[in-house]
Image 1: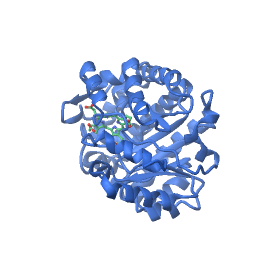
Image 2: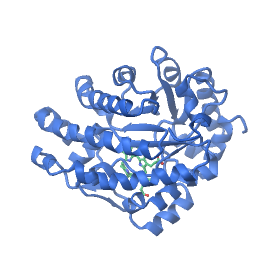
Image 3: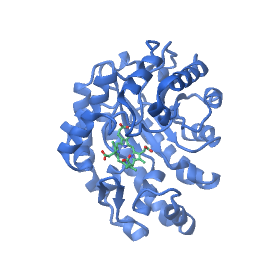
Length: 348
Ligand code: CP3
């Protein structure tokens, strides 16, 4: 943990404390809803160039901190940096989302190379090191990776998909072959997260956006087991650095996910009712994070204030971090974000 870690409010819930006002940050807090992001993105041209240019990636990370004073900054990068670094080139076509040449065989997995990935991981670590210098001392820095299952869905499908069909079919038809891909991603994620912590990250988050597409037995093998492996390896290396898991769509299985993976924080998605969020994890030693609907942040107005108050009331007295239930969307008016932060802090 970086120098000054003791003063970071964001970390208090992980130390067993319950601050009067919960820490707040938002998933995708840096991004297209901010005019200053759009300007820098246009300058960089390509999205991955932005991710791999420490000076620019650090600047984008700082933009929402300057505007809103969030309690945590999240490294500006993407979960698809890992397949890109491993040798499966990733392209972000304008307005289309990510494109990759699909990997659907053990041979294709064998052509990926963890040894060569570390050069690109080190570029990201350089962004982290810069940030730790440039961030205010009271602002925590969150590093992250995609969970192996979610990253694999993009690698196998070759793009985003509604139902992750290709990865799910490969996992059923050839579990050993698919396991080779997951095992590589576990090893790569551990190495990548370790480098981020050594460069100065105070906390880590593992994004499992598509965890909800798997039935329970497959969920155990492809979501829980890899996340536990990452959690254990990183805890051995960095016992004081908390990890937040985000098994989006896991529903009632989220409690099982917490107890089986040992994550220190659980990100609740938009569909989790706040009264469930406030009680379901009572038996677990875990910090709860969530879960305002990103579209309510677009709509704004009284409904936004009322829902924020409802979440705050239900989570009072709990080890809680205020966040959205999924990432900010591009059409979000920046002034609504300011309104949200003020409301959570009792200033609006
Ligand atoms: O949260 C942050 O501010 C940190 C940066 C961050 C990005 N992506 C930046 C980004 C993080 C943590 C992510 C995670 C990510 N990336 C996830 C998991 C969380 C989630 O939202 O479910 C996933 C599934 C991805 C993969 C990804 N990256 C997709 C599907 C897309 C295209 C869709 C889209 O929103 O544009 C991206 C691109 C991306 N990642 C952008 C940003 C700011 C937009 C790129 C642009 O400027 O054109």
